[in-house]
Length: 216
Image 1 (cartoon, rainbow, N blue to C red):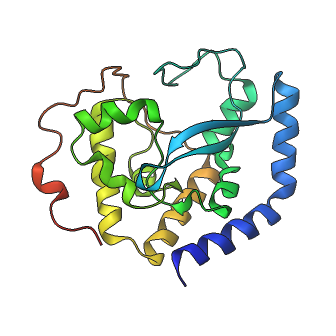
Image 2: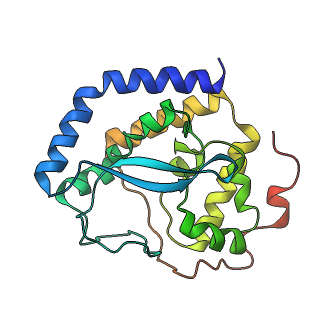
Image 3: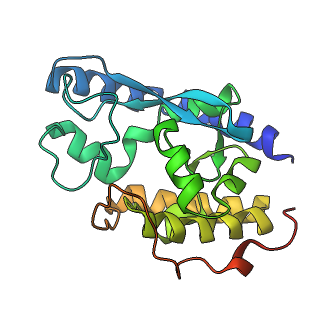
């Protein structure tokens, strides 16, 4: 089964089977704080194409916009429902729609915001290699490393993404999905790193050989 066919079948069945849960979460988000249930944000997809990602809203409306601010730790803008949704990763479920329409895949490198693209491309060598495949709801970097918010973490994340690019297969995708389901059921939190707004990695974080050779 090809990856796109797998994505179509899995995302379609997922949306159908999880529709009661999706509806319940949407109502909960609306009741918990004023504002829409869904949140859309521009991200960078395959070949550098921009698209709108969908999530359940986890923050109060009226926060800072248009800045390079990253949400980490006990951010006061996060709602009560948002804390639970972020811990269990259920805020990502609407991205099944993004998979269905072809903007994303179930498994792949997580898409970054366009605001960070220039900084990451400049300071993290081979960063744009991640754009060779569609971004995913979950990925090899996410199940092994978790959430990172600084340049050193971005370099670590890239090493996992490059591994996935070289070894990607349906079997590896199924293993990543299985570990992701375990994370959701366990309500595990991502490990966070100290925030570095400059996104300048230490020079020894990435060895030139890490991304050598052609990608499959």
